[in-house]
Image 1: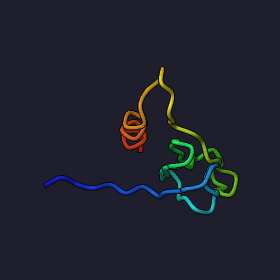
Image 2: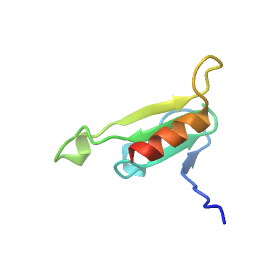
Image 3: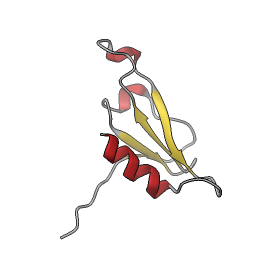
Image 4: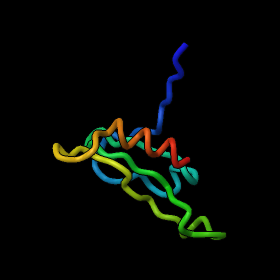
Length: 75
């Protein structure tokens, strides 16, 4: 049986708020066609973490599926 992964989703443009994601968690933005994740750049201070773009639609670049696989692999 296949496992279904449902990352958090946002339907309006822009990155999700820092408070909406746990460290390492991914979110898909259907309006922007981008994938975001919360990094751990804040070290021991999670409030200093950032939301970074890990993938998005670009006809000449990796697909969104590639970005999801990479985000999962990186944890």
